[in-house]
Length: 119
Image 1 (cartoon, rainbow, N blue to C red):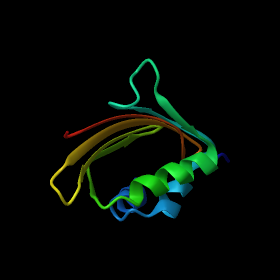
Image 2 (image 1 turned 90 degrees about the horizontal axis):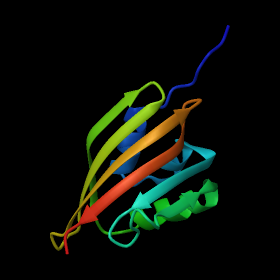
Image 3 (image 1 turned 90 degrees about the vertical axis):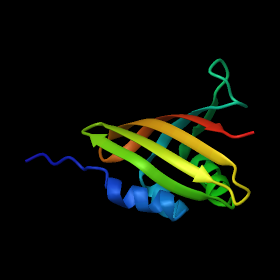
Image 4 (image 1 turned 135 degrees about the horizontal axis):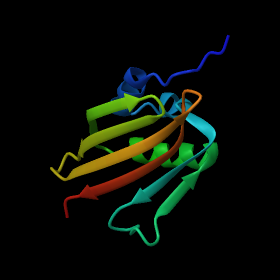
């Protein structure tokens, strides 16, 4: 009998909204990568975060900011996950992040994120 692990999307969404680094990190494979495209990291030179240590540092940075996170969309279909996250700073600045991820053995293997924020 073969079993395939599945990603617990509900737990991941809660972890994002509650800024829980440990639970978010547990959703990623140890060798996972995030490719970030935004105003500081254009498509021709994206920022790539790879492996547990870099992922932890990245998630700690994001969750350590004084802002709210609301997952507006979370769609998982087998080996893919799509998220739309809306964030807001106390001064009213808004950020939107759209992420598409690949899932292997119930964990995120790679993620491509595009984010934009108010100036």
